[in-house]
Amino acid sequence: MAAASAAGSAVVAFKSAGVSHRRFANFRQLSSPVKLPASINLQCRSLSSVSPSGIKAQVATVEQASTEAAQIVEAPVVVVTGASRGIGKAVALALGKAGCKVLVNYARSSKEAEEVCKEIEASGGQALTFGGDVSKEADVNSMMKAAIEAWGTVDVLINNAGITRDGLLMRMKMSQWQEVIDLNLTGVFLCTQAAAKIMMKKKKGRIINITSVVGLVGNVGQANYSAAKAGVIGLTKTVAKEYSSRNITVNAVAPGFIASDMTAKLGGDFEKKILEAIPLGRYGQPEEVAGLIEFLALNPAAAYITGQVLTIDGGMVM
Figure: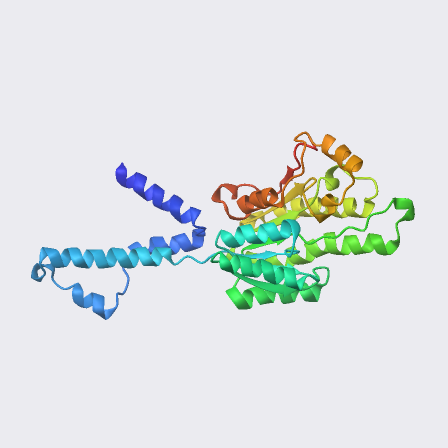
C-alpha cells in the first residue's frame, strides 16, 4: 500500500513539474532492460564477488543516476503576444518566474520588452524578445520560427496583443474598424494557426486567448473592439473543438476593468460610475489576470478545461 502511495506521489510530482505524458512514458521505459555503459557493466559482474558495502554503493549510484535523469525535464516554451506592458507583461513575468522559456512579443515598445526579459532572466528563467506585428502573417511565421530556433518547440500560446480605436458607430472611420479587427481578431487567428501546427505534431499544447467582457455584453463607443473580442470567443470555441483530439486545449480569459495607465487617467466622476458597476468595488490587477492564465497554461488540473470563457471582472458580468 505504501509503495502504491509512493508511486502515485511520484506521478503527481512529475505532472506538477510540467512533464508531458510522452516524456513520462520515457521515464517508465527505464524499467525495461537497457544497454548500460561499459563502466557500469563492469560493476554488474557476479554479485557473489562483491561485498555488501560495495552492493550498497552500486545501488546508490544507480539511484542517483535515475534521480538525475528524472530531473532533466524541459521547461515549457511560451509565446506571449503584446507582452511589453499591462496584462501581457504580467503574464510573461509570471510564466517566466514559473520556469518557462518565454518569447516576449512587442510591436513598438522594444525597450519595455527588453526590461521584461531582463526581469525574467533575473528570476532564473529564459526569455527573448521579438518585434513583430501579429496581424501580418509573415511576422507571425517569423516569430514562431524564432521560438523553434531558440528552444525547439512551442508548448503554450498566449494571444494578448490588442488595440483600441474608440468612437461611436456613426462617426467611426473604416480605418478605425479595420485596424482593431486586423490586430485583435485576425492576429489571434494567425498566431493560433501557426502555433497549432507545431502543437499538433507532438499532440500537446495549450492556447489562451485574451478577450474581454466587452465581447460578451458590448460597450458604447466600442463597436470595433466589441466585435473583435466577440469574434475571439467564437474562434476559441471552434478551435477547441477542432483540436481536442490532438490534446490541445483552447480557452479564453475575459478581463473586466484592469488597472492600467488608461484607468489611472480617468476623471473622478467617471471612475466612480465604473467602480459602482463592479460588485467588488475596485479595478482588477494585471497580476490577478496573470494568475488565472498561469493556471490554464501550466497546471495539470487545467488539462480537462477547453472551449471555455473565464471572466475575471470583479463580478461585473454575472
